[in-house]
Amino acid sequence: MFEQAFKNIDDILHKDAGASSELDYTEQTSWLLFLKYLDALEQDKAMEAELEGKYYLYILDPAYRWERWAAPKKADGNFDHDNALTGDDLKAFVNLKLFPYLKGFKEKAEGPDTIQYKIGEIFGEISNKIQSGYNLREVLEIVDGLRFRSQTEKHELSHLYEAKIKNMGNAGRNGGEYYTPRPLIRAMIQVVQPQIGQRIYDGAVGSAGFLCEAFDYLSSQPGLSTRQQETLQKHTFYGKEKKSLAYVIAIMNMILHGIEAPNIIHTNTLTENLADIQDKDRYDIVLANPPFGGKERKEVQQNFPIKTGETAFLFLQHFIKMLKAGGQAAIVIKNTFLSNGNGDNAAVSLRKQLLESCNLHTVLDCPGGTFQGAGVKTVVLFFTKGAPTRQVWYYQLDPGRNMGKTNPLNDADLAEFIELQKTRADTDKSWIVDIATIDTATYDLSVKNPKGGEEVIHRRPQEIMDEIVVLDAESTEVLATIRALL
Picture 1 (tube, one colour):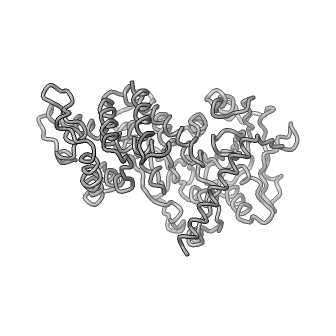
Picture 2 (cartoon, helix red, strand yellow; picture 1 turned 90 degrees about the vertical axis):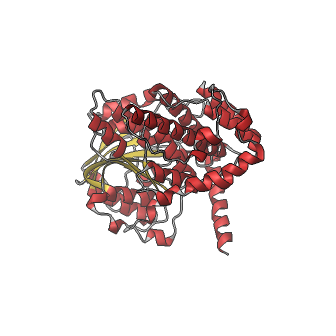
Picture 3 (tube, one colour; picture 1 turned 90 degrees about the horizontal axis):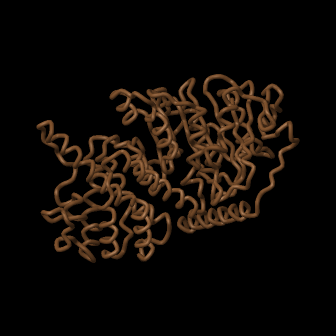
């Protein structure tokens, strides 16, 4: 039922002049799902209060509740077409009344960790792009048929929403920016093994895939007490996101996974000065796939001891600083980080800092094609803060096939890595490098399998074409920024 509903919504949006891509489809579906979810949440809370003989104070005023404008019902429970807004009347209500009203919650909210604040943030960042009020009416009637009441329903909806995020990532020029393959995330979490009570952070949260998977991992543990469940809801998962669309999607994704008021802040993480970070700001675990290839402005670079325009290198400095002593991190980064030299002093300095301040105990080398739509090779760095690195265990992931959209990474591909990592076993695909043997002029940490000679990367034509598309798009973005400044 849910799958067909999502398909029908996409079909309607495809016909609408205001929604032109998978990104638009996901964004527009997100705000509608959010309001439907909010209606279900309010009804549940009102029912609980009634059973306890208490009064429930609704978040939304009557005129802005779902059953009034989106899906009015007759006394018999059937849809009331006579009193349902449609066409230009519906569009005018949504654009001129509903969105401004919801945006106002940000100012009225008691704090950023409340559902009221999230409402204000979401509707202050996006707009209704559905140009036809008749198309919007059709979509509303489909969304009204979705149910969020049972855990089974929420679970199915969350999977379908994840599929939409994946499609959006594949359609965008920077696929990895929106979607990190979930099998890779799950493997990273299984190596880190978070515990309830630890605080988990992603400063480049994207669609919140890391936080959602970590929530699933922890909440599936048997026999959780009420206090532990509350800890998972309110005091475990934290994220920051710069881009408006990704922020909205992250909030919705976490809500569908079962976190009612996600601790996600809409901000540019890199504008924070590292010198201002205190012990109370630090986290037990960092899980992230920061964007790479970006170019940060000089004033942003001033926030970091190692100056560089490369976004991923700035994020890595941030993550090291944000970890508590003894804290663990698992971070995806472009594989060239391990070997960049030839005048790239920032990369050398950053590798030196990582090795001296953290125990980089594991490097997972991912094959080309791991990230759909992003023609770059990546590695995952696993490290613990507080002690220098003595040895690094490398594992070269080789699923034995060319990966692509029709043949993506799966959990079985990573099973051997997870098992071997526990003992840091020496195999044809894994080996240990003693840090005492590396060149301290370059701190080169390249993936060089001693059983297979020097690493040779054979890139597929599609990977090369994907990277050309990415570079072209980045050039266009830079030119547009320059023109705007002129």
